[in-house]
Length: 166
Image (cartoon, rainbow, N blue to C red; front, side):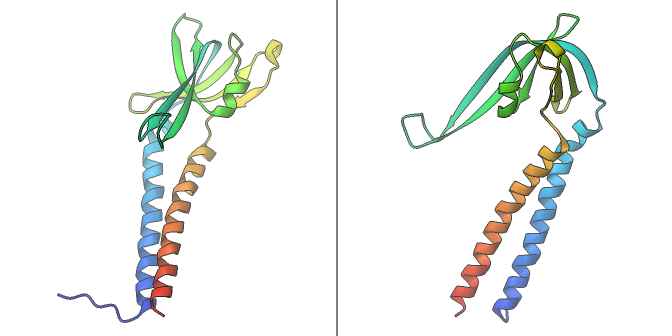
């Protein structure tokens, strides 16, 4: 069976349909990856910041070659029972969460996903400010980035097809 497209407009409609399907799949993927952590109960504890670190990972070579790097930031908190837990934090929170400061941490933890810090509210002697680290808006931002990339590619293909049909 041979598939024949009668016009460029038909092809553009097919591309738009595929685009909508891809956006729906990205949204579903984001939701499914976040569902376990969103449904987990929130935990709170009074903690002390005992360590902070940055991890750099190079791709396609080393710092001397053409490559790119990602940075991940982490903070370790000591809980009242003496246990320590490390959490990934964002770059902005690195400046706001001070080593040896104390405060109340709000987090979620699941076996599938691990642990995710939501906020850290510093005690008054450390400024008393609440540092928001993970919220639902982060998931929405990631979705919009994915959707933006798909939109760019779909738009490029449509423009290319229009130019080629002239």
